[in-house]
Length: 500
Image 1 (cartoon, rainbow, N blue to C red):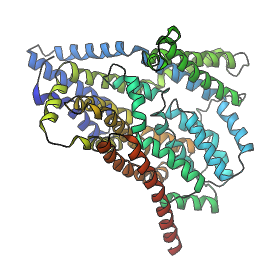
Image 2 (image 1 turned 30 degrees about the vertical axis):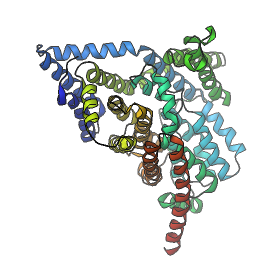
Image 3 (image 1 turned 30 degrees about the horizontal axis):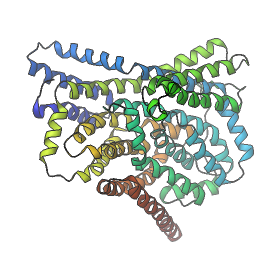
Image 4 (image 1 turned 120 degrees about the vertical axis):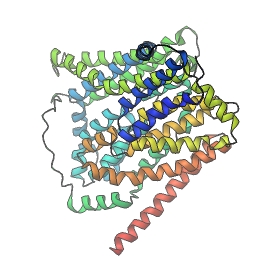
C-alpha cells in the first residue's frame, strides 16, 4: 500500500459525482477504479500500462474472493425465473380471489405476500402485481395503491431479510471479519425499512390515505380502474401451475439455505449456531438455492408443466438477468479494494476525522441524508451502498468512532433503500408500476409523499440514535411520529377535498 494523502479520496468521489451526473453506475464505477489505479501507478512510478493490468488483476481477485456469492445469485435467479414460468403465481391469484372478500383483507394479503417473497425485490414486484391486480380491479382499489404496497414490501423487506441476494451483497461489502453478522446487527438501525413496513400495515388497516393517493383511491372507488391491460408476447407462464408450485420451491430454498449456512459453518459439529451461519454464508445460501432448483425440477418435469428444454432455457434466462447487478458488485468490490488496499484511503479519512471537531453523534444522520440523496438521484440502492459502505467503514475506523459503525451502516442501507423505493429511475419503482400495470408517473407521484414522510422521520430517528447509542428510542419515537403524521395528513387532505 502507498499513502497518497488527499488524492486517495478522489476515486470514490469521481465515481459518485459521475453517477449523480450521468445516472449511469457502470461506467462511473469503472472510471473510479481506473482513477484509483492512475494514482497508485503514478505514486509507485510504474509504467502507464500497469493501470489496466492492476485494474483487471483487482477485478479478477474480487471475483475469486466472492465466487460463492456469484454462484448463489445465479442459482437464485434461476429459481425465481422457474417459479414464474411454472404458473404457480397465477394459481395463487385464482385462489386468493375466492378467499379475499374485503378491501382491507386484500391489501393486507398483498402486504403479507410481499413480506413472504423476500428473496428478491424484482421477483416480488412482478409476481405480486400479476397475482393481485385482477382482485384490485374487481374490488375497485386503485392500481396506484397496489403499486405502492408491492414497492414498499420489495426493497424495504429484502434489505432486512437475512436470506436474500441483498443480504449477501451488503455482507460482501462490509470489510469486517464477519460481514454477515454485521449485516444482522444493522437491522434494528434500518429505520426506513422498518417504518415503511409499519406504515404499509397501518394504512392497509385504517385506510388513512393522503395526497394524490387518496384522490386515486376515490377515483377507483367511483369509476373503477380504467387501465387496459395489453397481452404481452413474452408471457410464458404455464397454465398447469398450482399454488404449491409457487410456495414449495421458495420454502425449500429458505429452509435449506439456513440449514446450509449452519452446515458449512460447522453447527452440526458443535459450533454455536450464531457463529456457524456467519462463517461462510454464501456457501450455505448456494446450497439452499440449489435445493430450490432441484425441487422445481422434481415438481415441474414429471407433471409436464415444462419440457426439459424449457426448463433449461428458463435457468439460462434467469442467470442472464443477474448479470447487470453483478457487474455493479464486481466494480464496487474493485473500487473498495483500490481504496483500502492500494492508495490508503482509509488511513487518510481516519486521520482527517480524528483531527476534526465534528460531533460523532451526528454521523448516522449525515450518512442517512447523503445516502438518501444519492440513491434518489441515481435510482439504485446497490450502487449507493456499494459506494458508501467502504467509505463509512473507513470513517468509523477512526479513533472514537468504532461504536458508531453499526448505526452508520444501518443509516447507509436505510438511505440507499429510500431512493430505490421512490426514485423515478429506480428499476424497482419501474417494476412495481409494471407489475401493477399502473402508469409509471402516477405511481411515482402518489408514492413519493409516502416514502419521503418516512425518510424525514428516519432522519429524526438517526439524530436520536447517534446521541443515545441505541436504536430503540429513535425507532419508537419514529413510529409514534409516523402514525400521528398519517392521521393529521389524512384529515388535511379530507378538508381540502371537501373545499374543492
